[in-house]
Image 1: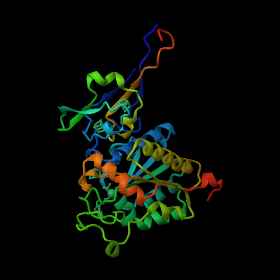
Image 2: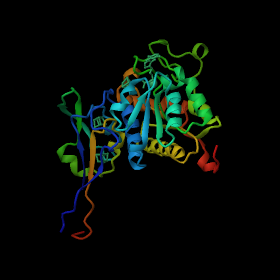
Image 3: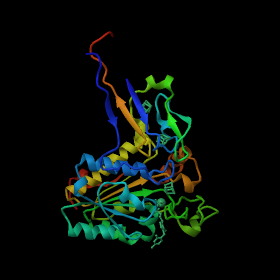
Image 4: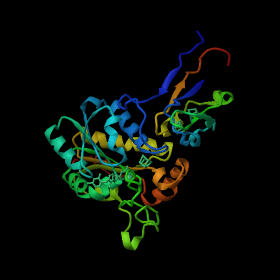
Length: 78
Length: 256
Ligand SMILES: Cc1ncc(C[n+]2csc(CCOP(=O)(O)OP(=O)(O)O)c2C)c(N)n1
Ligand code: SF4
Ligand code: SF4
Ligand code: SF4
Ligand SMILES: [Mg+2]
């Protein structure tokens, strides 16, 4: 499982991240931050699709995205 | 034990200070800063570096990179960098300059510093406009591009063709590495970092002058939303300013 964290106080709503996500899960939310920018988000129901590729974080000009990956379990049901 | 530890795989490099920037949404200065910061971390240069800041929107770079810095007068960063490097040859010296700064008022300084082969690195952010002062024409403004000082669009006959700095710099004897990359896509950003690393290594290995041009967006003065501005880089800038390595003495195996 991978996920991103959008640092909402740093996001400037430029939407560049939305153009590079291979699974197209990043969208503009309806929330404004303190600077008046409508921040990017991954809607709850889309979260599990994140591949952890970090493309969004690479293109973000404001270091507003952190990317987390959880290594796949080797054992277990597969 | 089925619960595996989640790993943070992308975060702010230590060399970039944790504070919001004054840049407009979608401005590529932020991307350029991050790439420099990542390399300073990865090459362990943070404590060894002296930044020469320039005049333009990136004038406050010393607030964003956690390294020692000197602020140069407009266009003079390569001259200041020359002095700093000669006084402190043990330090890693980089300048960070816009296209108005480097290719207009600072044309003499950049040419001669490159020709002398000063052991400095130049990060050249080309956004085809004077960003800070409100969007005047730069030497790099594309033909037909409208700015406040060429409202009808840059005219080849009156203003000449946009200057291709990387091509010119790569012809000079003291240059160890010269390349042009772009910050418009994930792939191009990765290449930009490779070029910056090469230029940085050329200084660390005492091979000569390092120069990297980064095609960058200024959505505000281009009067475009950031996503459109990125498309403009792809559709208009890259065809005129071709990407690639123009000089690399490490490939030729020679010094300069
Ligand atoms: C000697 C001098 N002349 C003119 C100016 C005004 N000035 C400030 S920034 C700038 C141009 C900056 O453009 P660029 O280098 O392309 O940087 P950008 O803002 O686009 O990143 C100019 C002409 C100045 N500060 N000093
Ligand atoms: S890490 Fe990759 S998959 Fe996940 S949100 Fe960012 S771009 Fe999309
Ligand atoms: S690229 Fe960064 S600043 Fe722009 S919308 Fe996405 S998270 Fe926000
Ligand atoms: S004016 Fe242009 S270069 Fe300056 S901060 Fe805004 S987008 Fe960036
Ligand atoms: Mg400029």
